[in-house]
Length: 170
Image 1 (tube, rainbow, N blue to C red):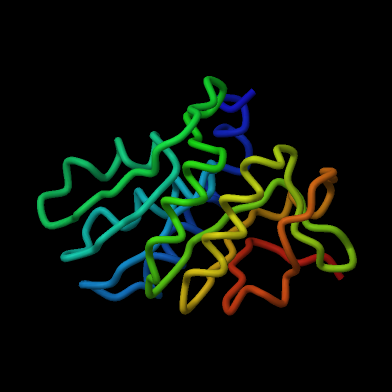
Image 2: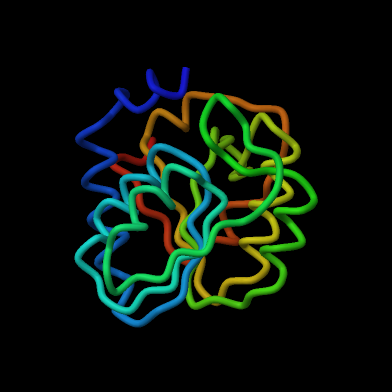
């Protein structure tokens, strides 16, 4: 399913990734959480210098680990085989050790009332820790997330300082 999601709205995700990367200056610290859109942001960050990237995504870490001037820090915890996401209490505890300049987060769904939603409560706990420990939260989401639903609440759209998407409904 994760590989299939990578193929959904690919051009939109790449454009969102470029827009988010443009907001992040060189020499910044940031969190990047799990997701295909956040992976697009990580790809767009490859030309940056002096970044410290803390992630709970093996895919993000693997994409950025070869960038010479970038320090990549990866959370410990349970690795989900489906998407290479690291979740659970160990990852939450790890994230809480930091206070970073930016957080780049993705979600599984955005409800009409602004609720940010996901499917895995263990991933939600990590995302909540990321939001709580960043000075500027950048939410990245393609417009298909407005048509989806998920049962676990991460937070609310109002917690994002910047929201980047390809299209807002209405």
